[in-house]
Amino acid sequence: MNNKDTDNDRSGRKAARAADFFDEARGDLEEIGRSGAVKSGENLARTLAQMEHKVSKLETLSDATKALSSTLDLDEVLEKIVDSTIHLADTDRGFLMLSAESGALEFRIARDREKRSLAEDEFTVSRSIVNDVARSAEPLFISNILDYERFKDQKSVIDLNLQRAVCVPLTIGDSVIGVIYTDSNRVSSVFAPEDMSVIEAFASQAAIAIENAKLHGKLVVSRENLAQENLQLREELSGRYQFSGIIGHSKTMQEIFITIQKVAPLTTTVLIQGETGTGKELIARAIHFNGPRKNGQLVAINCGAMPPNLLESELFGHKKGAFTGATSDKAGLFEAASGGTIFLDEVGEMPAELQVKLLRALQEGEIRRVGENADRKVNVRVIAATNRDLKDDVAKGLFRSDLYYRLNVVPITIPPLRDRRDDIMPLAEHFLKKYAAKMGKSGVAISSDAMKLLLLSAWPGNVRELENTIERGLALCGDSKVLKAPHFPQIGEGVSALGNIESGLSLKERLKTLERQIIVETLGRTGWRVSKAAELLDVSRQHLHNKIREYNITLP
Image (cartoon, rainbow, N blue to C red; front, side):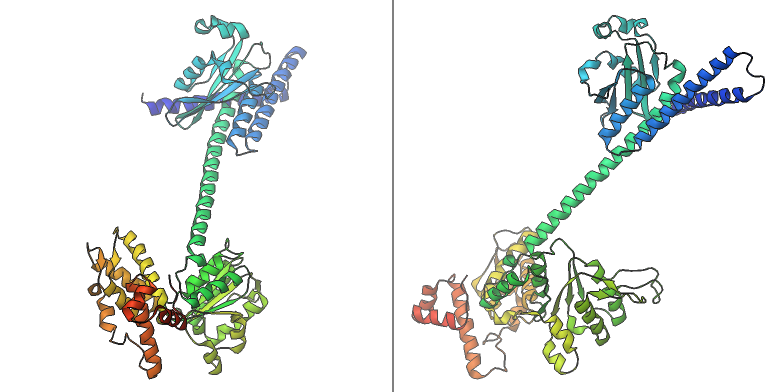
């Protein structure tokens, strides 16, 4: 016979013993009800006593099983199991051991009849019994410990005057997950060997309760770990998007930082304007993560990236059956961002019919899902961004004036990179470190000639273009520790003798732009040492300082 057959037989015997107990109780009840079954008053009294005993055990078993379902805390479950087993077996004390991952039994809890905790060292004698039961996976009832040769001479048995012991395995399927042991120094008339089936039935429920409590504990730990990871992620995001972490040394960027510092703690609507690639979403994230809603969601959507009907559903949600493909109710981004912030990028691309709904959401704090008649309240901070001149669009009738003024509560205009060249060098250094770390390159620097190209470029793609240029240069430089002009071929081709100065400017404006570029480039070559740069430019130090102030050049 193989192990599986043995386990199946063992499980079958346990089930049979428990069934016998219940069948006997049912048989006693039927016997009382049958006419002529009771021949004398003595027989009736004995049958009633037996019936009362079985009913009492069943009631105790029922109460004990209910107690197990009252908690999912493992320690509390173990306490209830030991207390209930002591009560069922009419013993004085007991303990419970559970199998560790190694397979060895580990002591978990010990209790007495008064539900007080006991020390492990009070149960030395019982370890042999526990090991036997764990190996055999069969329960053990010892009516007189002194009859057992291996125990009768042990000091603890003599000192405690132990009489009875009950020990049952806790099994799940074919595995023994633990053992319950109880003993007493009293002879009991309440518990008999035939009552062992009740203990076994309870042990089966106890094993399930233990496994459920373990699973619950793992879920709690996983949930706590997830919450901790979420908190850490939010802290990382918060640190990443602190406005102090946005690269910007120029005077205009410093003014933007001051504005962020003022509006972030509020719930005021903000409109960020700037060319593509200037970092509008980065500013929006800085506002969100420095405000009171930083623990809520920041939901971003590009209003120009999808057709009007789909955009409406994404923003406000839809009801099942509202249109083809709407197979279920769906919450929109305004509902998803409730309690947090929604970032509407390229809001100037929003079609006129949706501008009305957005205006209502801003004014009333209410949205209506597509296909629904009822309004829903939302609590959302709105930050919008656009690369268009919305004021001009309002004049042309392309954008609603009421919506424009509702969005433009606090305007932030990010200048293009060509108008804040002071930021090019620190941005380039920042992106160099960022992508060098990602590519596993260290000690890479930008040559003075390459930096000159970066400083003189018009950057139509702004910061995003600069970032891509540095990443591309690092990829092309191979093992070189210096990024040189040839590593930026696109920039080199686009920079003219006048540094790509816009042709639409007047001569005076073009000369000023060129003068500013030359000063910035020279300062960059000299490590931003004014005296050295003045020497190279053949001007006085004071004259150079005056030019630095005139052109709003911020020294790192």
